[in-house]
Amino acid sequence: MAMKYPNEHLKEVEMVGFVGSAIDIELTVYLLKSAVKLEKIVIDPRAAYLVGTPWEKEIKGARECAEQLKNHLTLGVELVIL
Image (tube, rainbow, N blue to C red; front, side, top):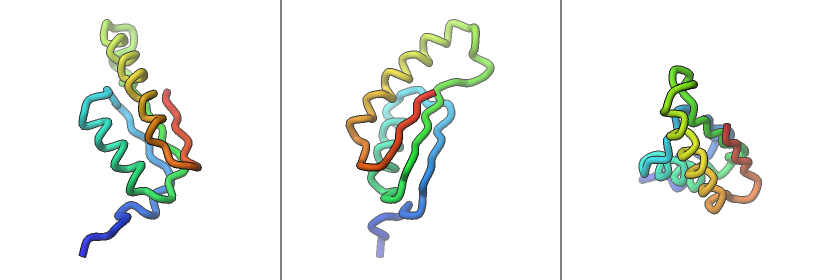
């Protein structure tokens, strides 16, 4: 028998290296739905080795994509985008 909320005790998630791809969004939305006690989700699109490179534009795009996740938040969940 499958659990209705398999991540029911999860309170905080930090996603490092978020690029805004379909799988990033899918995983985040899944966690928002299945982690009923989630209080905070931190999205960090940065990777230290990319600072000062042309890839920084990619990071900006990932942040913009992460902002769209606000539409999926449930009451009491804080979204932090670094």
